Image (cartoon, rainbow, N blue to C red):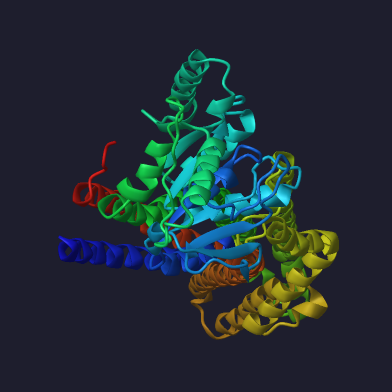
Amino acid sequence: MEQVLTRQQGELVALERRLVLRVRDALAKSDGPSADLERLASLVNEMDELFLLVVVGEYNTGKSTFINALLGDEVFAMGDLPTTRAISILSYGEAGPPKAIGENVHLFHYPLEVLRDLDIVDTPGTNSIERMEEAITRGFVPRADLVLFVTSLLQPLTASELDFLTHIREWGKKVVFVVNGVDRRNSDEQVDRVREYLTREIATRLGASAPTMYFISALQALRGKLAARKEFAAPNSSGATPSAAVSDPRNEYPALERYVLETLRETERVRLKLLTPLGVLRNLLKGNVASLDKRLVVVHEDARVLRSIREQLDAYSAEMRSDSERYLIEVRNVLYELEGRGRSWFERTIRIGNANFLRNKDAVENRFRAEVVRDSPQAIEGVVHRMVDWTVQRNLRLWSSVFAELDAHTARLRESGALAPHGDTEFHYNREELFARLREPIERRLGEFDTDKEAREIVDSVKEAVTTAFGVNILAIGLGGILVAAFTTAALDVTGVLTATVFAIAGWLIIPARRRRLVNEFEAKIAKLNADLATLLRAKFEEQLTRYERQILEIVAPYARFLETEQTKLESSLAELRGAEQEVTTLEQRVMATFPEERN
């Protein structure tokens, strides 16, 4: 049977150890709390330690007296005031002075046979005015394989005890309740009332059914053992501790001693030892899954703000590209009107009766300027300026909207207290710093935004592009100068028509044909100019729009990528931890089936 027990136990321990290491790695990847990582690292080693029977309770409830009774010797100090200031671990060995084995941990030895298989731990009182003492006890609870919770018959289950029991239950520990002080009862009915009260309160407050309880007088048991030891000291050379001789029928100390020394062996001890790491895992997983869920909500909330900014940018870009076409239509309309005037001008001017006028190149050019070109250059420049002003103003509005979005979100975070630092985790995602860094360049851009300067730079860029494209010194004579350069040439060509009239009687027929050709050439030039100007203006507008988009994206994109990475990391860690929760449940069921709980 022992070999089967060892094999089954070894298999389960190996599975639990792998699960502990897997959870530790998952928490490390998700920036889990350092305290939890340390707890898991310790848990791996604790799984190889002896069974830990941990005695807890408020000071002056008789914890140390009970352990002394179990030993039949006054090993631990007893008294009305807090006497245990550190964790005291009792192990098998020759009795002697305690040894410090860590901060606030002392190791005692005693030659009690049961201590070959388990260690008994005495803890500081949980309601001491020294809060550090309760913190020491709370910190040791996760290591316990079984908790003996000592309370007083005269003041059972106080509010502070309930609070501490809740902490114990969070770690999934089995608790045996020890009600000390039956020797001070007023009547047997008092014991029954307290038993009924504890059963009801433990079930109601802690959700535990049928709690295991022993009503004892540790002092009676200790005195009985000391008296027996003294009486039988001479003949008792084996070193065995005398059993407690308790005459009080309501003192259940002998039954509690049998449970600790006899019942709590083999299968029962193995079952509880195997459940300990699973209880620790369940508690840590529960807390960290909840924490990761909250962090994921935070990341989703902040990512939503950045998505909103990106959506604003996309909507801005789409609207700008769509609305910009109206300015190109205005340019086209200016050219269409010019084309109409030019067609009419050619019809009126290219006639045989205007032969003398048509021979005067300067006169033809001046009239063409005055009657055809007129204010078209200024009209086109006006359209370009309006287009540029509109582009700059809309960009300013976009930056203002983005800043307002970040400002409002930061205000919501401050109002909700969401910018408080994370004190219980290594999660370095500082929301206030993130949004401060986002706001800074946007606020700086808004502060430096000079619409006039911005517009001049864009207009100069357009003029330079026109100069390059059409070979006209637009920077000197204005954007509309290209119209004069393009069309006065067509007008001057009409002088060549007069030569035909001198040498051909058919001049009356040639002039109309020549006029039609000039009109066609003029219309072709209008069409080409319209297409070239539209292409150029679209290109410059797209260039400017792309620059504006890039300015926003260069600020927002790194944070969006960070949040996307953080979201992926959290979702992966959550999946890993939730899978571990299911595995904990499976292993618990297997432990319970393999090593069923013994009933008294």
